[in-house]
Length: 185
Image (tube, helix red, strand yellow):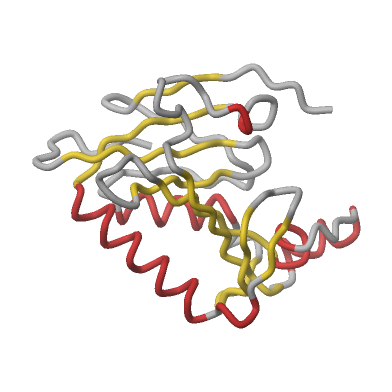
């Protein structure tokens, strides 16, 4: 993935890889607040109803999708520049990307509107510490978390190539990447 090279009015967004999925952190306002966004399968991602059989089915048979949302007072690196404690041992990579402020604002408005339209299905997942709604789109091999994330990045002016089933984005200059030590158990 290559971020936009010439940005007139920059703002920073973050693409955080968690190993099995990625989430996009969009600035909420000028006070360092962010909204973290994710996409996945409703049962697997939102409800933690996971099994090997279901995991293999979701890629080949369209299932209900879900949009995930969480607000943060700071970006993933926090106000002091250190990684937020809650990402320690969970996130594997943090990509820092400068994009046009207007593109980030437009995508935020689009995702907020999409989330609000489905608010009647909202649930909170304590393990993921995120709110989820059933999305109007279906989840399957051609429309899964990595391909949706790639689409969001394109809306931010990034060039994205390749096809990935798992989160494994590689960010080229002028983006910046921090690889993290994980302690998943």
